[in-house]
Length: 345
Ligand code: CP3
Image 1 (tube, rainbow, N blue to C red):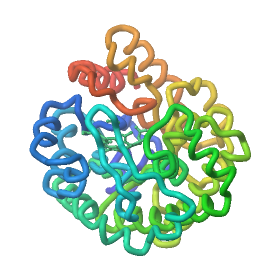
Image 2: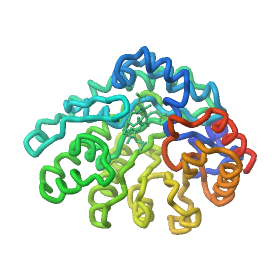
Image 3: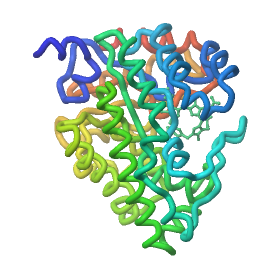
């Protein structure tokens, strides 16, 4: 083991080497459940202003590590900065979530991935600043949304329970849809490469809407674009460590794990613990506590946390939730969760 290996337990685990310390981070760990986040958020202006102001974005990235015994910081940004940087209109309405001016067959060819990176330079500056302030044993996680998930927002204009607008568009307008995916693959490779060069140790691909797809759609719209991003990224950054999180992939998960090239797999909370037996041997996993168990707290949370840690004892495992932490989550529950997970190993 090298000196670096001792220094960053979470990075080492992504690279497939289990550590004595159980690495822990929490999806969406910087956010509204923290009063110090709400304070910065209130003086930032819009949500995108916060994402594009390196001083404030670096501050909120670091906030959870000041409070909790976590092993990683995740860059504070959003998956929808890429559509914004491509020239689509994106805004965030309080209580409503993101609202975009939907792309069409006519507007897709006008999206320009070559200009996107320039618009995202404040986010890259945030990575640089966080790197400078972060302790040497902490891993810095960069991220982007995976093309299918980002496309569901670009086409539908907002979140939806079944992504029907994007699924229909992909089926009716396959050429325009393929062009949109190509644009997102290209922009994502450039964006993630820049994050690595600025100091990210690992990146996560958020495929938050990998559900509701049949196996053909899953292969073409989820596996293939994620595989191309991993491949393209590693041409620029050899061996770049990547976590893939195809939320809701269910029975498609083994194919995703085998074919995308990701080092470690995020498991949503609906994935049974024993299902990991269907994954390629040795591939690491991250997850998978239901965020509602953390919100509710108490004995049920502790029992399930111990079961998760025990189930993944024989493979590289990063403890995490199975989806993002909810804004109503009490801070005391997060403290207790980390204590219980560490004690369970
Ligand atoms: O600690 C972190 O993880 C912070 C960085 C981060 C944010 N969004 C900040 C954010 C990350 C990694 C994301 C990812 C993201 N964004 C995903 C994938 C992860 C997932 O949960 O599935 C998705 C689908 C989005 C798109 C998005 N951004 C939605 C649907 C919303 C509105 C719903 C919500 O949670 O509020 C956002 C807004 C957003 N992104 C907030 C934060 C902290 C809340 C807005 C605010 O503070 O005003």
